[in-house]
Amino acid sequence: MSGLEEGFGFVMPHWLYWGWLAVMPLIMIAWENRQSKKTRPQPDHQDPAAELLAEEDPLIRYGIKGNIVTRIIDCTSEKSGLFIAFWTINTVIFYFFEVVMRYLFNMPTIWVHEASFLLFGMQYLLAGAYAMLHGAHVRVDIVYNLLPDRGRVGMDIFTSVFFFIFALALAGTSLRFFTDSFDMGETTVETWGIQYWPVKGMMLLGAILLLLAGLSKLIKDIMLFVEMGKEGAR
Image (cartoon, rainbow, N blue to C red; front, side, top):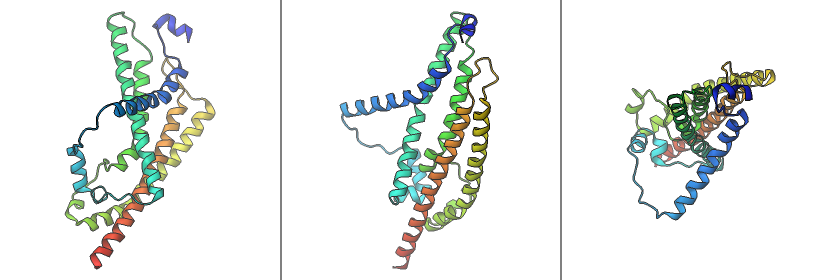
């Protein structure tokens, strides 16, 4: 890395990049929790986007928590989404550093762009479970919105078959990509040459989290469907 630093100034070491991505969100979460304890609790204001999702998704509107399995999975999905959300701060800092070095010191970096697009790619892969938990995935609702609540839940149960086909294929493909990349010690082809197998590992982890989130949703959908049937029979 020293040879690169002579020509390009500061080059972030690979170990620092991966270590910082692992530790930084934990620091931010701890700091946020500490700050929230110091400030007075504010009255809850419903997010308009959350209200819209609740209108479309009976699972969100009825607030079904499921059983202990779904609560553990949902907690994991929530925490993983919060964890990777803080990664965005790094990209802002990285590109600020790039602009300063490029236009003030005429020393463009070789690592900022690559570090940032890898980070965004990993965010995209890992955010699927959080989006599933909060009903944020795109839904083709031409027919869905015309159905009554129990019909919507039934539609979600039926279409979960296609979701699991996709998610299992993603997990299987990701596992093969990860093992091949790890075995060959794959690195990126850019000058920075950072390890590529952790990125493909995040692809596998994201697929596993998405599968678990889908399983949790299916369990809660079935519970809500049965409960609505009992209420309709009364």
